[in-house]
Image (cartoon, rainbow, N blue to C red):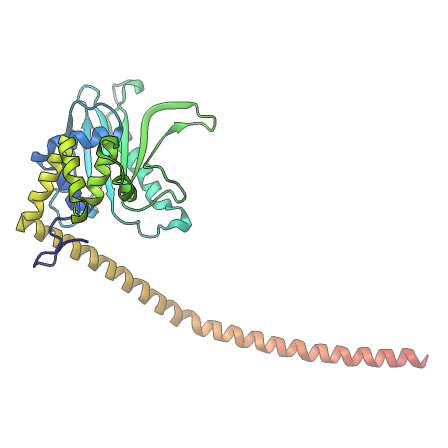
Length: 307
């Protein structure tokens, strides 16, 4: 159960909330956490990571409007690009019935945008750097699947790879509660990061979190940053502002939906009534014709009987 303080906000802010997530990985004091998290997400050795082109600062109250959450370059010599996004709840219009199509297409759009944005003039195509798009989702995107991480590259139906220039990665945070049932020494790095982002604000998992922070330096730094953010009146105020903004947005969408439904009903209900009346008239007319045909058939049968 989440512990609340007198301001009505959680004692420890949820690291899966967009603004908190971004702060935990992009504040200067969190650099070791950024390197460790990116290495775990990409499942590769990472020597260095530096941030670039994050359109809005970590403390922007409208953080959900920015293009990238965490836009960084991995290992300066190679210069690979990585966009990391936190999706705490399904996108508008997404659900299991439509296979969460929007979040998947958003991932593809971000990946293509990131890859095509690098300078290509005067360079060989083969020298372009790799691009990664990582989506951490706090809900099940691939319905029926049970994999913690899904990685997608460019391959044909037989599995032959065209190239390794781009990769889309989806990480399922909903599996955290199953992961914590394992001993710490059996958890992988990515599993421990998933537990942190999904459960770090849950007091009932504090012992597990302590063990994880003792095991992984990057998570220890991320947790220290989270604790600092959670104790800062300024950061809590920013969190409240983002939450109010989100709630207002959801309210407006609900109002637009209700008003749109009422407007459509006002426009089409009279038309439907008129059409139903026309159909009723036609049904009555057809019934009269059927009765007339029945009488004519009876007369014809009578005439044929007299012959």
